[in-house]
Length: 64
Picture 1: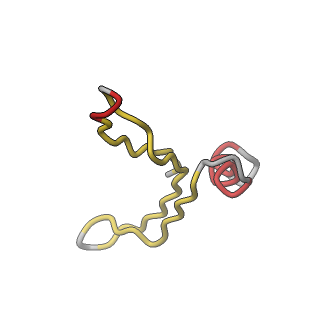
Picture 2: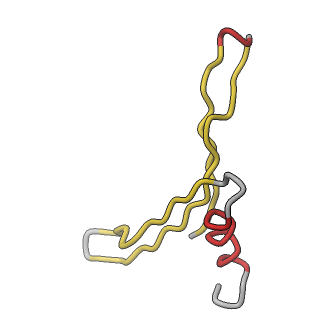
């Protein structure tokens, strides 16, 4: 599963909220007798560098 996330903080001095961090996430799971378990997780910041975009691109690229 691939997704993105945003961490939103309260900013009372600005009478509202601000986005503190935006990231791309990739989760891999395996099914066990006890249910689904996470086997690997990637989390990269979406800050203009290639790392974060690459996680999202893998979800729609040829390997997806």
